[in-house]
Amino acid sequence: MKSFEIKPVGYVSNEFNDPADRHGMKQKPSTITINDEYREALLNIGDCEYLDIVFWFHKSDNSRLTGKIPSGAERGVFASRSPKRPNLIGVTTVKLLEYSENKLVVTGLDAINNTPVIDIKCCDTSLFASESELNAVHSSILRSDPRIEIRNNIAAGNTESLLVKAGQLHGHFCPGLAMGVMAAAFAMKELGADSDGMENLLAITETNNCFSDGVQFVTGCSFGNNSLIFRDLGKTAFTLTRRDGNGIRICSRHESGERVHEAFPEFRKFYQSVVIEQNRSAELVSQYTRVALQRAFGTLTIPFEKLFTVSRVKAEIPAYALIHESVVCGICNESVMKSRTTQNGDSFTCFACGGKEYGILDGSGIHF
Image (tube, rainbow, N blue to C red; front, side, top):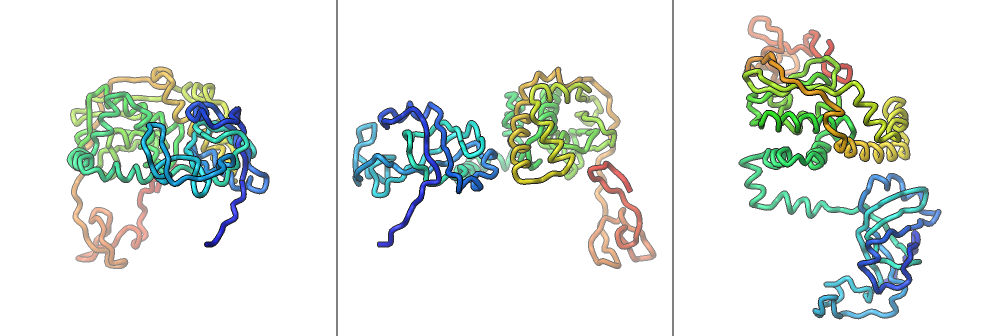
């Protein structure tokens, strides 16, 4: 049988020299010091809140194929977490508390002092998530009512869960997204509203930054279902209204940015480097992501009234979106809305092929 060589990548330091109190060990912090030759492998580890630590039971001197678990039941070693194994390997999921240079401070580790660590992996919960999403009953409910989870979280005031889901749309977590979630959840609850994606509930946003993605996710009003209206005013504000025009406008206070900064001062320097100066070194981006995460979820804890003003408004409501006929461009042979073409007899030319100006929405707003 082929043998394998395993080299420690680091060692555990804690107050436990005896493995008797496994549960007590998991509650206390441990420090894992990574050997210098493996420091590079820690790049961006701060992005992983939970880690799987693989270690060697260096004080376990023999193995057993069966034994008793804490309940007293007899089990095979492969059906237990016994340290007396054919290969003396242990695996525990831990929470990363701090990371500095080559040291990781974690909780949840049931390894004693001086335990050799042989590998570290970012925790993978994709199987659990997949099983949850494929649950037949849950899937059936979501098919008939796709916004039920969002609606329940709004009703419960659970903005943290809303922000987690909004991050899947936005791609990262930041204070702007958090403020969009807060504002939208407040407006939805205040109006007692929900979206069916049929233009009966409208969100009028005054900015095209991160804030608007929080609004889109929570309200269900999007560009795709024609329920999101963009007014290029450059204000962190939006109005939620029904078709009668009676709505609620929420606008960030001019001092809100400073209040968030005071609560999380570390964020600004990384924002300046990574976002403003476009310094995208892996280490800086990792640090920026870490502090942005803290600041995003921390923003949710700031009292709503310290960040926003709220007013009742009468909004100007557009007609329902038209259903445009599609035609084929005579040059590129692609299908296009007839309203976005020029016509010459029975022939149509799309704006792109015809060199005609058309509106563009990008980070600068709407322009031609």
